[in-house]
Amino acid sequence: MNNIEQTNEPLVVLMYTLITGHQRSVNLTRNQVKEFIVHFLAKKMYVVTSLGVSYGLNPDQISDFRVKGIYQREIKLYIGDLDIQREEIASSYEKSVNESRKTDSEIYKIECKCGAAYTIILSSKTFKGRCNGCGETLFVDRKSERRITHKGLAMLMTNKYFVNQASTT
Image (cartoon, rainbow, N blue to C red):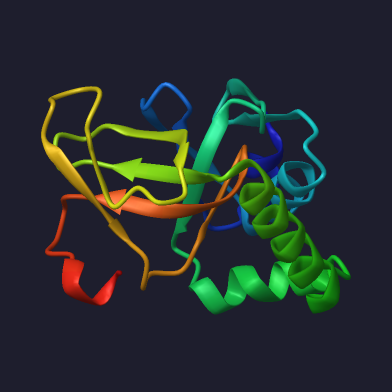
């Protein structure tokens, strides 16, 4: 019997995207989600057994993740419980912005309607690109929040919804 069967805790679904664009999911308890977030932020491998199957989750191979069954504000509370201060996040953000300005490049999180999801580094002046999977045109959404990826904070480039190009320049 694994830990989940012993505790009878309700399960939530951790859905993650690998840097190859493949999407996967695993059923975890809320405590296991907390442990995963700790490992993800520390960039350490997380090994867990869920429903008799062992998973090794390597943060270097995961471009993004989300949790079904837990509200976003609850995940933020988990991160807050880990004593991650806003100043540290802000300084990390400023550092990544300064680095990208120095190199005149930006990290972009690609989300295409064909299902492709990956991270790429392009010129910071880029406003559109093409999906490596299907070749469709993607647009940079500069108004959306930056995404946490394995390469750092990234701008979103998508074709899943209309991006007003006039307001992004």
